[in-house]
Length: 136
Image (spheres, rainbow, N blue to C red):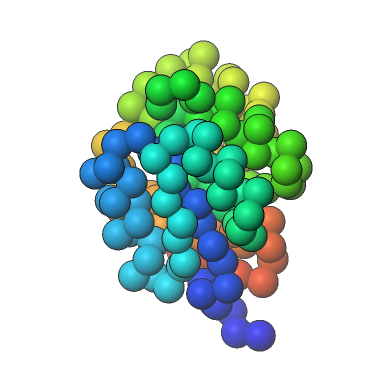
């Protein structure tokens, strides 16, 4: 097995904002990752029920279900699924709730391409061991 085989990993990107969702996809797909996109928490839960997903990237603030509420439902299907939360509100309250939910990392908006890639690689390396995270 090679040190980096990103094509083995499917990342679910969930954000109600079309542009934010596309921006995240445009960051990780060129690195070889497969992506599945969801525009709501409900759609994300349906995807996790039907498709193997290795990492979820969730926007915190979405209508109906927040990113953390979505994660709670997703983890009822796959309890060990790693998650990254993206938010424009990285308040102490959000950070504390993310930590309690065992979110791997919280990435503030506006997104930085290098931060997103580094965080995705580190999360996958931590949870799946076969992917080495490259240094920034």
